[in-house]
View 1 (cartoon, rainbow, N blue to C red):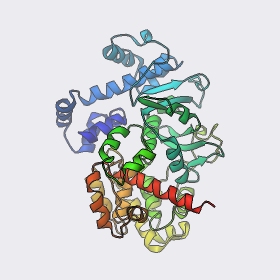
View 2: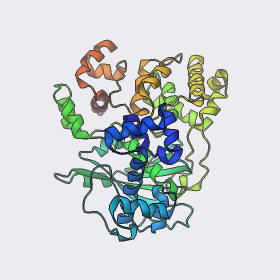
View 3: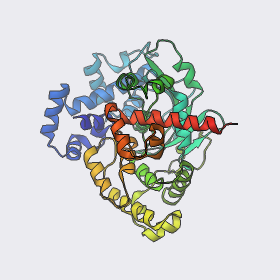
View 4: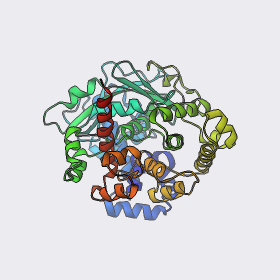
Length: 438
């Protein structure tokens, strides 16, 4: 059921329909409907309808977009369907809902600042300034540092100030998300607040790409996490307790594109983070294409953003060609090509995938070991319990030499070993940076 809910949340019913979702999950439509009705009291269509309705209500109440554009942006097939659904969900017509900022909202809602950023739908480059809401606490400095450290040339930009920019692939092309991290701490510092708003600017190929872009950004920043639940589960451990106190609200950022990330992770095996970024930049330069829509770069301060890496193009090259193009070892090139071929053939590593099956199929590829499998599980599959026990920095942080000892120490951290790992990484790297500072 959890997989079905994740896929519906990501808009699967809108893109592939209930039949397509059932096929993805290898169940019948009837069985899918039954498990959701039994578990949640709602059918797949009802869950998708509610998702669209709440997205539309947020846009109605907090933007100046015309109602027809709101319907389009929220994923409705027609204005009539939009009106009928809103009346069913909220008891009033869309036009009767207040067009003002909400006084409050729960985690996972969307608020929109329209003072400067709304652009008429006739503009080819819709631009929306949004505040994406997440549960408090939230650590913006650590999140920005993580994104900056893992920025890939051509796909990410790190400004001289606090801004970062990221290419985000959506059905209509490539969007750009810009995040001004200076604006987050003031919001995050509100005493006693149950939520934090993260301001972002989206530059979209089309308003129809609004919700896909938002869902990707939410995954990238791990905005649907429950940090207090994580803290409650981990704070009883004497090793983790001071780390949780030092960085409350630390998140586990996910990859914007799972398949691109898997290829990049193979390139990052047994090399430093800086070397990995260099190799990943070569991969993007060779196998991604310039964004087809000018909206990807417009106003971002970055003119060379590209679309995601094309796994089919990677798979079409021989290992020797990949070795030459990317300047990697022959063995690494063989692994990269085998993974690309598996991805092109349908291996699913996205957040809605079967995690057990994905791990098994990844591990069957020659050259992919437990470290790669768990890192992909953590940041592509979105498994909060993923745990790369063989990671060198993790083992150093734990003071152990063998992966099995790292496994033993982490047993009590289930089901949030991924978050524990993120805390240990952050603390170890911060300590190393302090040591290197004169």
